[in-house]
Image 1: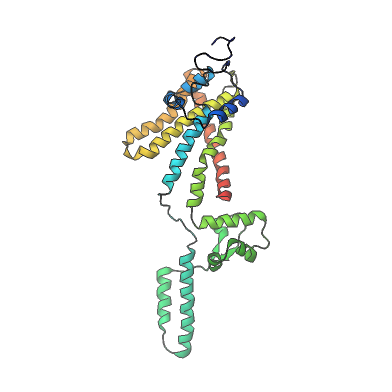
Image 2 (image 1 turned 180 degrees about the vertical axis):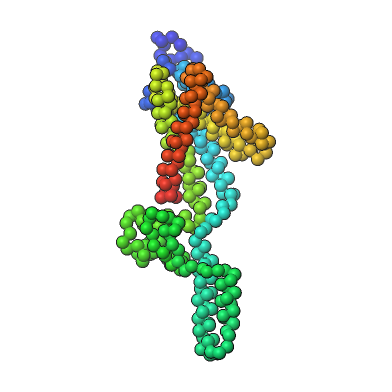
Length: 328
């Protein structure tokens, strides 16, 4: 396109040198995020060629394909929406460590048997009451049922006390806090309420974590772009261009994981393994094509990126899981 022209006569795109600022990048995303048009099929086809979308974007073909951030969100929403739906049908073992209804029922039965024993002993002091046998059978079959929950055993560091199971079953969290936690600080009260939810089942926090995983990965992208910027410091790339590379790569990863989650059970193990390996091969080929360096240099930076990615994932996921604990 000639530099004198303001718009391309073929696609009506405004003239650009191919370089893009963060401001223009974000504006482009919000302008077309919700517009589903003919660019999407073309974009998805190009996505399966390592590095093609990023290279085309760097050439200035911003209107020919869906924007990188839009593509990232579309694939991420599809993947994590599917995983959230699938999560509904998954059974989780040890889904309730409190077992309040069952334990309180046993405690009530045990108290009733002991009360009955006292009455029978007063009437027939020299006889062996039936209640003794029932209590013995209960002790052998059920074992010792604790009448309280020690939250500190399951949630170390929050300094939470033992709380009677009957209170946990019958009282609201706020009533329990008034009874047991008059001297608790703000974070102890929040931790206790969340511990109650977690004690009633792991499913809630797992579903919350999965449903917000796309935001977790989005939060990882700036760190990954910084790492790429450091790896290719001598190359004349803007920071946002490394960010675009990261968005394109993760859009491909999202699609592969979505495909394997939906159809992986029907695939031969070898085919399944090839799809998983393709995630790593794709990254190497994309790095070599986009940044145009030799195989040896690309390999070194590839493994450095993988290690850095692992560190970033652990760091961001830990923060995300902590947030999930206090928010679910």
